[in-house]
Image 1 (cartoon, rainbow, N blue to C red):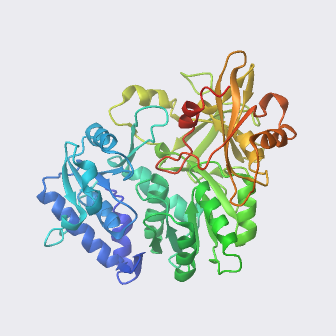
Image 2 (image 1 turned 180 degrees about the vertical axis):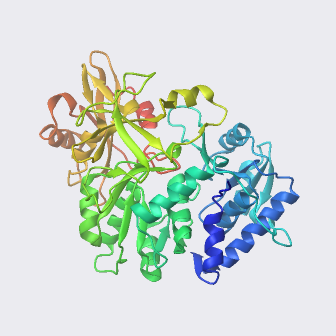
Image 3 (image 1 turned 90 degrees about the horizontal axis):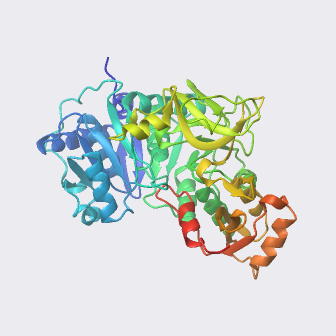
Length: 497
């Protein structure tokens, strides 16, 4: 049996050759043009000695060149190793060495990042053969397609190996059953394509149905609004910080045109309910919050219209996937917990990865009894809605009580002066940990003190979990996928208590 992720582009090139598939600034490319370019890149990789199954690193921003390079690697039968372009040279060298990448396809302006890595670098502009390959290489369903490296918030990044089957089925279930995309949809592509959310749900999902993808190389909210209006964008996928930025930009341009969105999906991190409600009201669209990880291709759950949308929840499992709540204290078995109880979110189904590249111990710890242990704490109610309580590693233990940071963050962002909030635990001599809140103020909020925020939170949060320390900062540290790096905050404010 043969199955390849590259068929996502190949099939649409056969069915809709002359349709514009992707737009980047003044550039346009039809499906036929993309497929021809991908096969030419496959030919260049063959000339460079890349064989089916070899790993090829890919560094670039959201451009048409990135798209053709991505599908070119897959057409050659090789394995894509996406590398975040904001990494420093040592971090890139680690990913290249750990993955065993034989070649790196690199955007022309990023070539310097790979100079210290032991890999042959092919600039995007030069990595084309004179003639396209006559056909793509055949792959098996369980062959690796992409190796996504985790963000490394708990140590050295690990390479999550996703198979052809993982990624084809995740694109299918997102496009056809969860998001209901059609060929008429115009998707806004501001999520990084080197990240699993942007790659699987935006890029592969849009190309699977034959829609059009509008690329923004770097996210800029005011420009994003302009592009969405100009191109008639109907679908937007983003992480919470993007929704916050778009909402702020729309308010600043009060009275200006807004896109007519029919689909909005948020993932990557919890979306504060306050932001969801404001966005829904301002843009006249229902934001559907979802959940997933690199290890789950990525989507595991999402609010789906047929089940109803529940603000503050991550919805129901996607088609063909099971999501349950397990006892987080039992490491060597999966012991499911009753409805309503807090436990670790566990996942099994076609979306669960093949394991961590070269890390058998880590794989064995992550996949137990056929279930993937997410490391996230959550609950499942009697209607099947799942809610994230917090990361297991972010749980704060204060004086013997469990404090879930997300619960406190949801309260803080309802303060009229607070735009963003992150709550972490810092060492304390008598309580073990103390609750610290790091906040970013809304633009034009005026003079607001840390003590005022403390007093406000003290009236709205139970005594054992209210913040005792507040720090106001200009911005929160974000990783490549725009998640808040709480480890950095813990390190920065470790002496605050």
